[in-house]
Image (cartoon, rainbow, N blue to C red; front, side, top):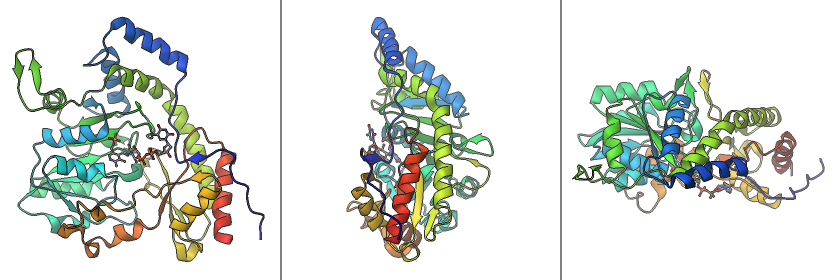
Length: 379
Ligand code: T4K
């Protein structure tokens, strides 16, 4: 048997944020300090909005203080109510956003290849109360956007995408945020592009912008008029300034991640029971996460055991998105939450593991992580 690999001397996490040069950030802070304008659509905010619109190839975009509030506002802006069909294989924010809008989430099973909502299973869940389909481009893997749009058009439904993980994903050169009626991006520190906390909506109809901007600023039109019950969803100048500096470093970060992904592919591609989850041909990946599926029977050790064993080597992987949202106490009573309706999601959620993936890792680090993983199977 091969020698046991040594543990890492420092903890290795699944991600680390891009951190711009502190002095460059100070220059930006000085400018903000001098202006004394800290929030409410300042100079940095305007600039970031414009640059992100270009980067994401979106017709229109609004910035937010985080992705969750952005999605809450997005649902309000389209006046969604009743029931919305969504996936159980996602971060809690997705169904919670519906609940915060007084909308009942209806969970639909997922496609085993893309891990996104299965269009073949959507139609049977549509009722007279259904107002929209909320897909999640989970791990940056695009939903079946064309099939979903066809169903929505047939039944007069809106299409909303949680694109929290899909910054930079493109389908045949088209920005992911241009599909459906609107899309939400998260700019949390754990994301490829980040503003520490933050988010954005992109939307097809630029006329929606006025309503979205009111909704994220208390419904204030001017000093004398409040035209709708809005919330505070504004991104501040400090977040926007950080975002502008992070944006400049993004292409280099993506190049590094691409190299790391190739190392993962090279080392794990032939391992029985391990499958790297990758987008289909024609899709430009976001490179937000590196996900593997572990088939315990073939690999010789289960995903849960791998997750535990990795810790002994100072490697802290994540079981995103275990447990399924349909298993939370607040949702498991719903008829659509019954495991018999969600067999694929229940299988997938036992197998997926998020591996360390960020530009600060070296190729040797990734070789070492793979060596540990393969050792676990042989041990
Ligand atoms: N929809 C989807 C599909 C989402 O995944 C998310 C967020 C949302 C909606 C909501 O968007 P936001 O409202 O958050 O903008 C993290 C993030 O907090 C969350 O934003 C993200 N998804 C989710 C996938 O991951 P946790 O609780 O797993 O994060 P945490 O703190 O355990 O961090 C993971 C690892 O990242 C740490 O082990 C170390 C590293 N890390 C983390 C932070 C916060 C850093 O190196 N630096 C940091 O500042 O939720």
